[in-house]
Length: 489
Image 1 (cartoon, one colour):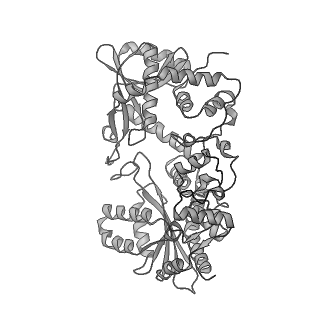
Image 2: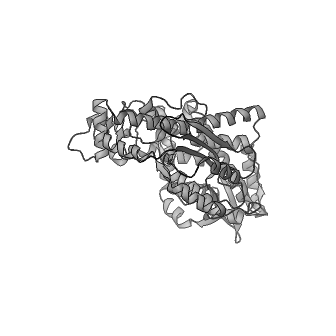
Image 3: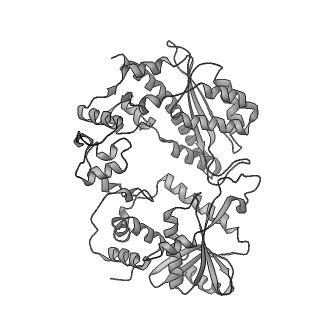
């Protein structure tokens, strides 16, 4: 068996899942390509890494397009005692690329690992611990270890200021603690890699943390309505699974479930929805015409695009509003989608004010999101403050009857999200759309507006975005109509 090269990313994969690391080495074709959301996260990470390099003005950025060339050049440049970015360190069969290797004292170095996160996580510590161990095996003296994380209080004014965008966290003590037994863990991973057969598949919390595993087939054996679809099942679902309980239907009567989980079990067993007619009628009677069904789409890139904006701050770039004047009137659709690279908020607010009128319920799904967007806008554009406060006082959350389980359909599979509720209660969803969720809408908009997407592709994206956002608000109309029909049964 040839010597296997263990990189930092492979080490972290090995810590998470033996099966995944084995497949990465032996059957890599089984690993699906990164989806648009994952690729966007990677791209954001690269951008953040390049900005962090500016924290060290005299740093040398080592090219990474040639693996051995990067390692050779790193070895040569170490003698210059200058900050090195993308330094490749190879020690026997251990390899790591260091974001920033900063010289200190006479013959020591500090490791600076750059992350797009705003807080220190356990996986970051394991990441840096491996880097430090790799460096020490290569003969480098590491003094301290730092994480360069995003400062979410930074506000862009003009050009991005790297010193304001990043906070440096000294994690040397945590790395020291995590480093205990690291060679044993490396040996265990290498042993797994050297096996001729793939390790046995065992599902668990590690499948979703610290990263979502790309091997979804591990869960394919589970029957429909498994215990992992239990509403807020969490650790309880794994406890039941480990105890031999596979489906919600099989959960014993004496097992401790809350009222909502029992409703879910009853619906799975009967195959029929649960309908609290009185609660639904009370909710529907609280709606005051004209009805305005409202939905925002937002972007929140790690590196702010506009002045006065923080990292990851949600910036609305699109809205859809369906207006129903009274019970007899058909809905009228209004929409706004920014058409240039300027800050979309001023024009969006002006258009929204034209549409929402002075009275009537404004129906949203998951009120906290729209309310937060609006109040954030009020803080930035004080001229709209009184109007926004009035709008927020009219918001009605369509999530409420589903979060309360006043209505629950077994097809929801434990979820009260709009994407689960809409097809369950109306039989219509998003499967016919090219953009079918908010995260993809945000990323696609960013690529189309601030990337180098061809104009013909950009035109299609804009039409797809209009269709997707419209489906959210039209879908809420369908839900309200279906609730009314169920409450009359």
